[in-house]
Amino acid sequence: MVLKTFGWSFAVTALGLVAAVLYGGWTAFGLVAILSVLEISLSFDNAVVNAGILKKMNAFWQKIFLTIGILIAVFGMRLVFPVVIVALSAQLGPIEAVDLALTDKDQYQQYVTDAHPSIAAFGGMFLLMIFLDFIFEDRDIKWLAWLERPLAKLGKVDMLSVCIALIILLISAMTFGANAHQHGGTHADKAETVLLSGVAGLITYMIVGGLSGYFEDKLEEEEEREHEAEEKAAREGKPKSAVLLAGKAAFFMFLYLEVLDASFSFDGVIGAFAITNDIVLMALGLGIGAMYVRSLTVYLVREGTLDDYVYLEHGAHYAIGALAMVLLVTIQYEINEFITGSIGVLLIGASFWSSVRRNRAIAAAEGKAGSGEKTEVSSGV
Image (tube, rainbow, N blue to C red; front, side):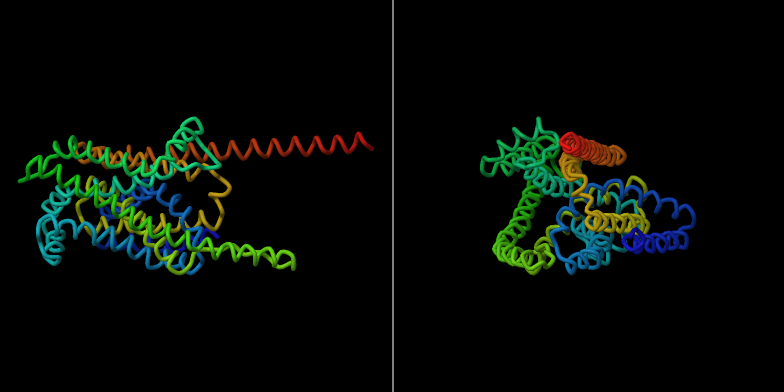
């Protein structure tokens, strides 16, 4: 099962490391290995959230996520995206931007750094909306009940998450945006850039997430019909089959996944410049890491890990909220990538341990109940 799920990741790792050695020797090999670990550590929460969405989709769309989706993730976000950012910020053509990335790496890195406030504002707002919508929803299973219960009650207020996100964006634009350093620009220009980019991230979330939700709601009618068919099949002794997303619903859910992955990749792409400004090594290292994130997502779905460890999804969303705030803070201040990755790992680790303790408590309670029933039976005899 592990080899089947992670086989392509292992193959890409081998090819990527060989390519690194051929490209720049053993130094390049080490840099690519470090970048791969960086991407995996920063994106583990991405895999958990992706798994929660992917398990709703049928086998066809899961394969699309692993094929076309990985091409978008690796080549689109880890290779093309930094070049596009440079082309737009420096007002260069695509060919000139690629040439700059290969021949003048320091200048290329400077352009990407200058574009960071707009990238961070867009990605931060998109991720923040995911976190806010999660914590304001009333759920049967609560991890931090003392916090999630009152937040669920507040979530009954319409558009509360949007209002809070806009308030945070305004504060970020007036503080971080106004003080962020930009070559050849003014504080007002930077504040406006942060504000516009953040609003764009918010709009993107609402459009993609709204379309996904719309088609999910329409699918409920089909699920009701399927439920009736399942009951009939159960009466006839036939196995039940789960209703999985397909068609338009799955397409927009896939689109949502790709935008989500793009937002998660921002910190990895920007953080990679702390290790190297060589676009080829960045693409190799981050691409290998992205493959493992994809494989881990599928593994979580096929093993039913989210069903067994019910707090994992909570921990991942708290990590998303933390990452969103980190991205907004990095508009002005530099934050070490180790800190960013550690926050996500610690939150998911804590949620995993809480899930284990919950499972043990349930098993112990069931064991006591079972032994009690046996005692009653034996005393009756």
